[in-house]
Length: 459
Picture: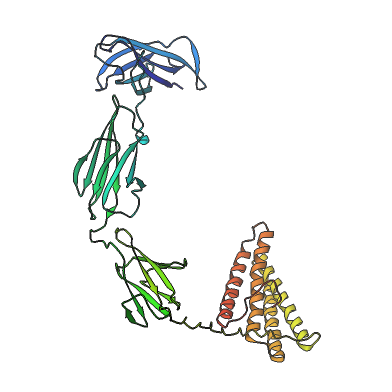
């Protein structure tokens, strides 16, 4: 199939003004094209040269493809200069669909042309007080900023434009440059145009975040209370519990960070934090930081509470005693009637687990297998009822036995599914049904303060 490669343009015979007297366009073509139409256009897209040539006889490999060289030269009567952009089109005379066009810089002997920069290689970096900042943050503080275009070739011209609310203004044409952002939410963007000699201009633009509204607090203001009473002096206090409350800035979305010298802290939307002040001249310093919603910078403040030298330490409150779990292990000696009843119950439970896994392994199971599963469930319920009646079994233990049974039904289905190399998908339905029942039983046990259900111990 006809194909062209590696289009280039070069100039030689430079005059005193550095203008080449001769220009050569070249490329490579596959062996199936006998003659080539060569066209050359200047940087204004005017046709300056056209001819038909025969590819050279020498065959050479180009990236694994046998090709022949196409060369056409002409006298430069158009004042095309070194480094100017020219467009070369090569077309196979016998196949007009086989064509290739490339715009290249005219390379002159003893005057090589540097390639034009890639538009994607030009980047923008923003800084605030010498620190790089990202334009992807929710908001900026108002103030002075710096901007630098990266990847700019030496000798390029650079032009900056700052747009605020639709009003554009030019910035110093230096790299880096500086600009100032006022308070407010007017849309803002920063643009840069890089012009490299004999290359097309490259433009980049980024949007800038909103700024604060201009009514930002400069520090956190708070009050101290004890038992609801405002504390006006923070020294010579009695020991006890004090509440520190932020009174400004207060707004929905603010995050309040309370931290004392011991390293303990409270972070959240609550404006109040409680602290215990010890006696005998103890002091407690609290740092309050407010991350303000709405683009204002964070503000902070500190307060130090100190007790009187003769103030006693506050009484130590004993932790409340939690209600003991109502588990009742229902211990019994072996051998005994309760022991035999428990053994009978667990045999029925194990039979039910095995039939449950078999029913979903052979799904859709036979009627006989479903009947056997139902009989096993009735046997479990009957054995459990007798066990409860004779041995006075606690509510927690009853639920633990049932939860253990359905828990192993779910786990057994998952293990069987894995053993089947994940092909018997109905086992997952069995695992889901049994798992939901076990979860409900577990939640009921948690509400009654029962022991945690352990599948790897007898219930």
